[in-house]
Length: 267
Image: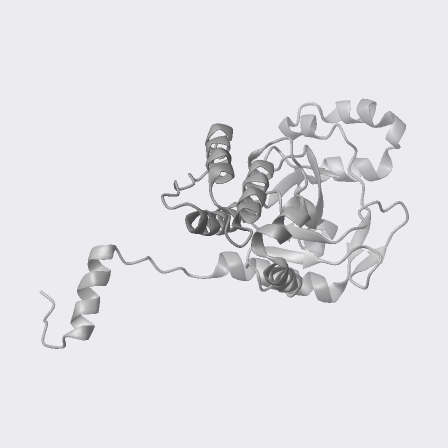
């Protein structure tokens, strides 16, 4: 396991090293870059899915309440509790109350630092069985989002087994959270036994990042070539694209009028 440096809810995370192998073999890099890999149920408990969960919850909340309050970007417990009480007193329509409550619980899980795994049944209730299955199918096909990559469990055809592997479940590589670690510490971990790791690590106490390696890093699996190539292609495409600035509302309105009325001239 590798340090998450506080960007995830857990102190450590599995990770896929994306530093070119030739750089490591030829001593061209003194660090490695890795992408965090989390279990699917853990990914569903991250901020990455908050906007979808919040929007769907708001959709059903608007249908249930005549004057539904808008959910804030990061709803507090007080806000969620107030909405829950309003939902309890509302006349239910087509099980909307159950779906809204499932959404509120999912939001709680996402925004709580102590909640590491989502209740997938709650998400199934929120989105509906059919839609949730469709979302999961898109996740497997890597068409749900451009900033993550689905990896089947270790015992399937994507991962090469290595003795001692404990990361068995289906997982997601997170492209938005590339992390870096000193190569020296990783090489040291490959040589030092587990029982002497704390004493061995003291030799690297001068490195600022050494304090994050209380848990000895250990390679547990290897991604097969085809998947690694596809993952890297999608990762580089996410950051290599040239984005265009969005038009402001004023410009959009003006350009739309230009299109609708060809006689209009642009000053």
